[in-house]
Length: 338
Image 1: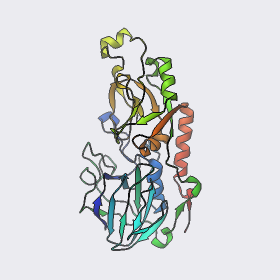
Image 2: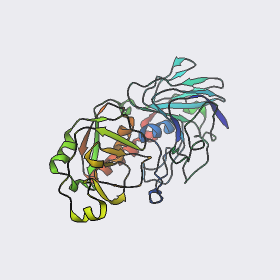
Image 3: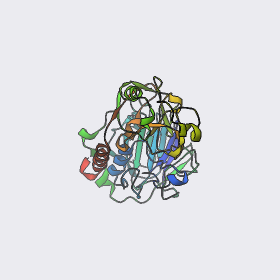
Image 4: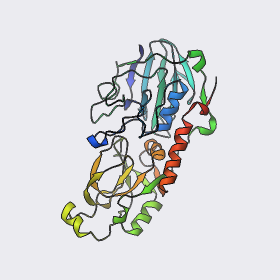
């Protein structure tokens, strides 16, 4: 059913669900939300399916909207329930402020608008029933570079109409549901991002690994859902093994192409580490000093250019435990009733 008309698509607003993991071998990244928690909670608040575990589950859940920095404006075509989560874009309904992290009713003719965020970078909108667009690779997530998912594989624009599936629960039951206050994230630098070192940290000088883990890195403006570039000191490499010179070239950062996990941190030429995010490539020929843990990809996705990020090394066991904790929080147990 037609549920919203787009009056203003904002800077860059896309339809996203939990993504399409399992296709990296074909060169297709998972896409999905840059902030898994925010989209997952937006879905739970409006009675939707938040999907299975981030990046490894096969059920992507229902689709909502991811809005970058500012500007989305929608007119409701029917009565429904929505929830706005993530970065605070000062949402309004017919010009009056409305709360974040809470399910609210909208009626036909109402205008929902998002302003400009001062903290965090991405806001999420869940709509009861979930957005109805064709599946691609088992997911509705938009990948703008590949022109797939969402509406014609592109950001929203004025005149688009968002259709939704039938809602699963009555509006009266959904209206007023809210996230437990203790779980509402604080989107504020400095960002503390946990990483697992490797898989090529052994190619870097030990002092450069220490620099990577202690320096206050600044996010570059040349960052997006494909990669987040960080400005700071040059990282130096150990003397180059002969086999790498023969097989990958003389540049100390070059390796024989291998797979890039989501969150892998390449350092081309030892300059400006790049966190490859949910729309990142599947293969690459640059050494990766570390990999952002899945549970902290949302922190990267919510950071803004010029903000400070510190990377902290953890074990793989800690990374798995953090992801389990994140996924456990995206559940009915985290929601207060109306």
